[in-house]
Each structure stands twice: as C-alpha cells, then as structure tokens.
Image (cartoon, rainbow, N blue to C red; front, side, top):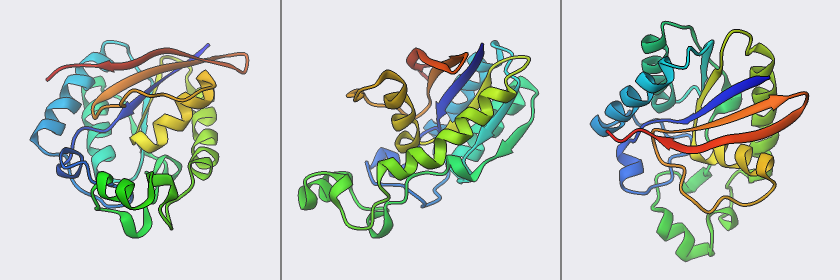
Length: 186
C-alpha cells in the first residue's frame, strides 16, 4: 500500500485577504511559516520518503521546511502548480463570485477538469515511489480539492485550510481518503 500526505502550503497575505492566488507567487507570511513548521514536525514523525511540491514559492517554502524537519529530499513538479485564474489572479474571491456567480464561471479561469488531468498523473507517480514511507505532496487548495473529490466521488464542502494535511492511500489501484483536514494549530 502506498500512502501520500497531501499538504496545502502555509498562509500568505493573499490567503489572509481571500484573494485568488493562482500563479501569483507570494511568500508565506509569519503565520504561514509557523503553520509549515507545525505541519513539518508532525509529518517528520511519520518518516516520509520524499517531498514533492508545486514550483510556486509558498509551496516550495512549505515543502523545504517539511523536508528539513524530516531530513529527506525535496523536488519540484510543475504538475502540482496552482490553478490559473488568468486576469482574476489577485482579485478578491467574493468580488469574482459577485460578478460571475462562481469562480469557475469567470472567463479565463483554468477549468477544474484541466487541473485534475494535470495533477492526477503526479499523484500516481508519487504512489509508485512510496517505497519506504509516505510521500508528501505540497500544493494548493485548487489542486488538492479535485484529487480528494475524485477519490471520494463527491463534492467537498469544507475548507482545505492553509497548513492542513490530508492522507490518501492506494492499494492495488484502489484509492481511499484516510484523513482530511488534519491540521496542527499554531
């Protein structure tokens, strides 16, 4: 059985303001750094094998903190990149919803189905490398959500908070969600 720990990066200023981050590249704020350190301490106790992350700074920094705490390698995989919100990047989520009814309806936003098609092969590849312990994938809400929804076969209504963890496993091509929103309070 392969285990994968999905981690949402720590908080940024744009998260705190509920702005669409997408391909913008803000750094973690002080709360985000504390979230990453807290998650790293918990994950290190699980003896992970390797950490992979999105190439965006907020994910790289979170992954680096986890990798350092667990004394393991960190690699970047562009397939784990955040959803592209196009011209709506940096805008308040509430404003985009007011204009279009939902973020998915805003013109130029990368469809969630495209996000899933891009990221799912990275998840499968990670499962194949989980030999001596779980693999950690550090990414973004808009990437983790379609992974989890695909596995459970439905919509997730709850928030995938910055600095939260979600444990999934694969056993003979059968995927399951073992834990969601495992979050360490900082």
